[in-house]
Length: 147
Image (cartoon, rainbow, N blue to C red; front, side):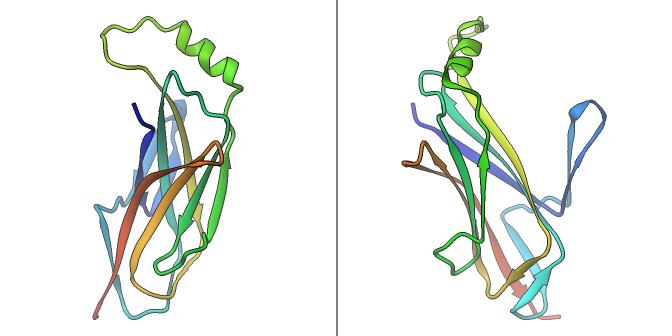
């Protein structure tokens, strides 16, 4: 089993009563921008989930965001992970209802205000787990449309 993950790209993330999250203005693979590059988005939010088989607890996770055309990340966010013993202890106490594999899940919300886009292309989200494994968490295509 491999680690994997995904991202939700949206205009805003709100924390609701009871700890629920609301994602406002979600994008479905592409964001169409009115105007020409370079331009500034007032706000862009990304919520990520990273899944690891229960047999492979996380030591460390760093999420990086790359703007279109850039090889260096414009943002880098470490995710605090519980100690390995805490992760394995939680899993050991679970009694699965099915024979489906168990996963440990890490999540974070990234809020960028503002975001300067120099060109169109793919905005990419990557996690670096235990400083060695890259996990692709998704991308958002950014395209300019004439007004």
